[in-house]
Image 1 (cartoon, rainbow, N blue to C red):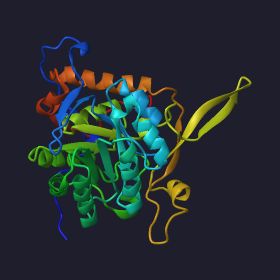
Image 2 (cartoon, one colour; image 1 turned 120 degrees about the vertical axis):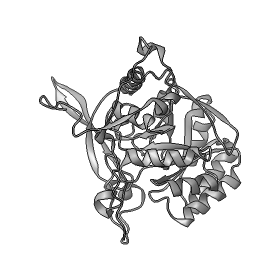
Image 3 (cartoon, one colour; image 1 turned 60 degrees about the vertical axis):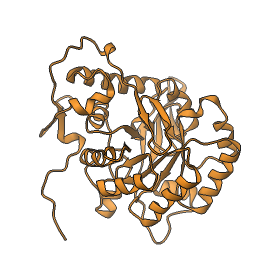
Image 4 (cartoon, helix red, strand yellow; image 1 turned 180 degrees about the vertical axis):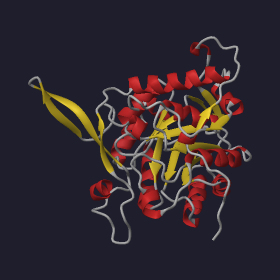
Length: 347
């Protein structure tokens, strides 16, 4: 047993210090980035935000809605092969990752879809990216799909970030337990403060010309700016995109003035008993639920939320003089704080 005494930081622990800038308006900054995927030689450009591969938010409708913003979606794993084939034949499907785990059936399904609708972005997603089996799966997937961009995770330390990149991942997904409907930290005691995980993993990845995607822990647009400032190339979010028309969550209605109005949507973690009852016939005897089920307010189209997120990032960039999004990490100085917000009238 050993104890690390140096501070590890979450988004709530810091603010970004402003810097003198020549920028006069938010309209002068560019929130899009261009990336080179090291293992494929492919290029990608857009706003580096990814809707999480949770079955409520990682939907085909969300992919279509985010396409106009240059953002992406990691589709959830539970679409049928026929649905995926039809979707990946659409011209606008280029902003979607095909998501899967490590089982043989997962990979057989991927090969079947790829045979009829070529896949160029793959998300290998497991809760625990520290197993040898997962590293071997990344290697095997890279061998089978040499021209696809592969995102793999989740991990929170530099050593495993390097291992996954060397195994064939272009993007390493970073985060254990920070999500709004994840209870892994509560149930297992395992995790890592998300901002420090991003800082340490991005430093390891960039040394190998790899990329990272900070997955989870985002609650407000300012957290997205902090993730980019900490070195995250992409950010992935679930809860911030839940409750919208493009989601597939069950909607609760209330009668108001004689009309049924949508007021809330069910949202749950993919390791929750809700998800396991839906897809696996219940919680297996050898494990426990590591997710929760909540209701989030119904929020209409995702367009308004995307405007808030992108507007918040643009504003952060003007505060530190970053003309382009790729400059944020170089121009960001974090200051540790005891509190961020004046909550006298609520959050």
